[in-house]
Every structure is written in structure tokens, then in C-alpha cells.
Image 1 (spheres, rainbow, N blue to C red):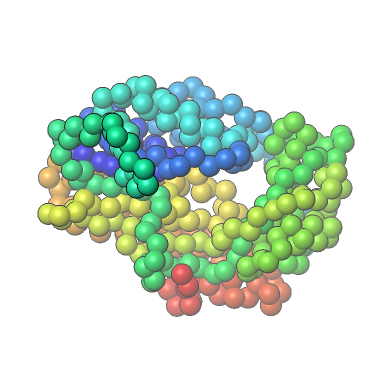
Image 2: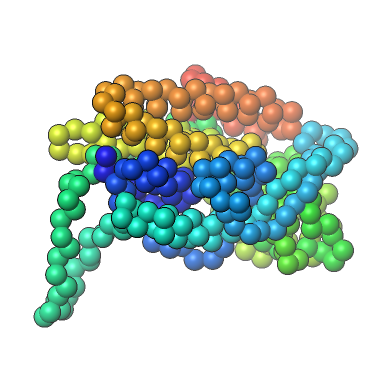
Amino acid sequence: MTVTIAGSGLAELTCAWLLASRGHRVRLRPRRPSYGPRPLLLGDDTLALLRSLWGVASPADGHRLTHRHVRWAPGPPDPPLAHPAVVLDGALLCRRLLDRLCAHHPDTARPEREPAEPDPEPDPDPDPEPEPDPAGPPHWTVTAEPPTGHPGEHWTAGRRHLLAGEAPLAPGQDATTARLDRTDLAWLHLTPLGNGRALLQAMVPGPVARPAELLGRLLATSELAPRLSHPPETAVALPAAPRLHLLPATAPSTCTPGTLLIGAGAIRYDPLSGTGTAQALRTAILAAALIGSAAAATPPDLLCAYYAARLRTAFQEHLTTCARLYPQAFPAPSWQDELTACGWPGAPFTQ
């Protein structure tokens, strides 16, 4: 099988690695690089999964955490729990995995040239056109970025957004414990990043016009406030409600390759679960297995239906967990729409 991997995120690279290791021809179409670090918190279970898939003792260096401290419902916080994890730069991790993929499979995994933008002044001596790929056109395209502009393709369980910004830890603060706290409006998560810095995140029940301002106000009403020297000066607000793509897999036709959506493009988990990265890796494993079964003459339409059913089941289970956890912390009316949206399938899901 010839497969185009359109993207260079963790799920896409893992799928490419699995396919190349099994003898499939992989064409890489890397995403344009993003600038700046992307903090990623990986528990030991997720790290073990990543190591087993890639066959490396340690996929990347990072800041080691040992415990987690939670105050979810009203009242005193739970005692600190041993929760080994590593905070690392997700962008750096992906670059290292891409290097490993190309080094171990130089003939199987090769970059696919993207169409060049028109040049207003053509080169009088242009480079020769690349030779056609002897493997022919791809049978499948795997990506974590679904096509845009097609309404009705997603079920989205609510409108909640995640605010995120970095700030310095206050002097003398514990840099090995991640902490989750709640206010009447939001839950907040403080993740030490090493070098005296921390990532502050807050989940709120809807879009936000000025995320840094709201994040500062939420921090001021939280028990996490003394742990930072000052609130984050800048912040972003990202959609974070659970989301499921309704058509995550389409079978190849005589004219077009099949398409498999993986990672957050196929199914997005609420950050509270802490399982988003592991689940993204699992979609990569399932997609690679699907392509292998198709190569062994299993009907692709049946495989695509099975893939969609597996994701739908996982999404339903995740919504059940959200519907159980969120009411314990947020009985206020501002969260009622989010709690209602955790029902399946009667709630009004939106794109």
C-alpha cells in the first residue's frame, strides 16, 4: 500500500512509523513548522505506550513531575497523589520522531513535494520535475486535520474553551507537583515546566474575548494564586469541548484515495481527562491496522465502518465520564448548557 501522511503531529508520525515498519510505502507531507514550544504533559502510561511504539528508551527529555494535587469539589483538597509524569516540548518531540522515521526508513518514508506557489518571475533554469513515484498514486491519505468548510461534519459536546498562559512560579514553590483547583466558574490546572516557569490553564463554559484578563481574575479567586509570582501576561483561548468527526474514514474509490482522520481531527477529548495524547496514539494504531487489513483484501468499506464505530463508542464513554464529573464541581447555571451537552445523542451538539 502507498499512503500519504498529511501532517507531522504525534499521531500522524506514529501512524507513518507503524506503516513504514510493516513495509508500506509512506509519503510524508509535513505541516509547516509552528514556532515556539508546545508544552505537553505525558503520564508514565502514555510514555510507556510511546516508547513501545517507537522502540526507544526515552523519546524526549523533559521536566519530571512526581505528584498531582486535586481540589475538584467544594471543600478541602485531596491528599497529594503519586502521579509520575513528564512535561516536554511537543514540537521538539515531533521533530525528533520525524528524524527517527526518516533515518530508519529512508527508502520507504520520503517527503512528498507540496505544490509550489506561482512565481511571478519564473526561473529561466528551473529544476527538473521529480520522477513519478513507481508505486503510483496513494491508496490512502492519513491526517489529523479534517477538511474545513463542510458543515455538519462534527458532533461537539458544548462550547467550553481552555485558557492557557505561562507565568513564573513564586520563589520556593514546589516544581514537581501538578495542581488542579476549581472556582465557581472554572477549573484551573497549574503545571510546573521547569526553569522556574509554570503553565496555567483554565476551562470556562464558553468563548472568551480577553483570555489573559479572565485568566487573571480566575487565578485571583483560586488557591493557586500564591504559587505564581504574577498572572500570565498573555494567554490564548482554545475550543476544548469533546468533539467527534462523523465521517472519520472513507474508502478509496477508482479516482480518489481513502481518507483516515486520526488524533484530534477524528476525536477530541476534554483536557480534564488527561488522556488526549494516549487516545491520539491509539487512533494512529487503529488506522495503521485498518490499512494493513485493506492490503490483505478485507473490504475497505467494512473497515471504515468499523473504524467509525470504534471512535463513536469511545466518544460515548468519554461523554459519560464528563457527565459524571462536571456536575460535582459546577452546579451553577453558567455550566448547565455544558452539562446538558454531555448527553448523547439527544443534546443539541454544534459544530
